[in-house]
Amino acid sequence: MSVKRSLYLDQIKAVIVALVIALHVPMAFGDISWIGVRIPVEESVGPFFKGFFLWYNYAINSFIMPMMFLISGYFVPRSVHKKGVWQYLQGRLQRLGIPFVGGMLLINNSSILLGRQSPGSPLAAIPLSNPPFNSVIVLWFLVVLFAFDLLYCAWVWLRGDRYEVDTSIPAPGMRSWLISALVLGSLEVVMTMQSEFWIALFRSRLNGLGAQGMHIFTYAFLFFLGCKSSFHNWFERLDSHLVMKWFRFSLFLLLSLFGLSMAFSFNANLLESQARLVFLGKFLHPFVAWGILSYLFLWFQRNGDRFGKWLATAGINSYGAYVIHSLILVIVLMAVGFIGINPWLIVMISTLFSILISFGLAGQLRRVPAVAKIL
Image (cartoon, rainbow, N blue to C red; front, side, top):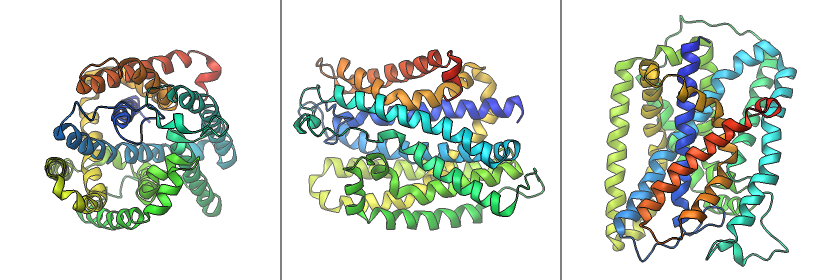
């Protein structure tokens, strides 16, 4: 890849991981908590706060993980072709496996122990003789990503390695985008309907998969679309007119869902119909994602030079920031969440400090050569 292409993809990764952290902050205000840290704000916030963060969660979650799988898939064919299947898998096992095991045993378990100490923590009721240790939490992404890597390598092993870039094949058009969104949106609804399974999975050590598993078909589609795009340079050959049309459609959907979220928040008598809003949101998930994903590619290709290399450097550190941010967020939330300031300020301060500390610490860790090889 050229330097310019590498820069813009790294810049996107930095933005996406920052949004992952921003997504997790408001979880501390809900019943689930963020790894045991729950900040009680019921008496100090109104329906706008609740409705906004209901929508906020949906809006960010609609595209951040799809983008991570899409970009991850884009780099796979080149790496497999360069290294060979077995050497590639050995490298991936090291790069994904070591952070997974270390993150689960050190980062996640430390987060759980610390989160238990927060006032009113739901984890405090769990006896120390049976703490919820060794949970995957955000590390579910590494498990699923390695599974997709295995599937691609199995396909290459059976088919043979025939990697070469062919730009004669055009990028998918409106019809392809629409059909994929309809099919995947329907699958999202069907998967979401298996609520008992996802709840049971969420309460297990595989809790991250319980929260994200209903999107697995969308993530698989985007990972392998990324692989396919690598063969044809589709990311760099997007139809800007089509991208803008779909992006405006995505914004329209998000604004419409914002209005519905506000309506449900301000009208308690509508709560019995909230399940319909959930299913509608799941069906529209791919429709929202397609416009935002493609627009981010287009915008950063055209404007990446505005940020120089600092954002690309943050993108290089983004993997480490993702792995460690669970513990950082617990520490920051416990430091600022219980001092009695306005809940909106808690969200903004916690988000800002968690992002800066996570990326900064990841950058410092990468100064160690052994750590840089895996993070």
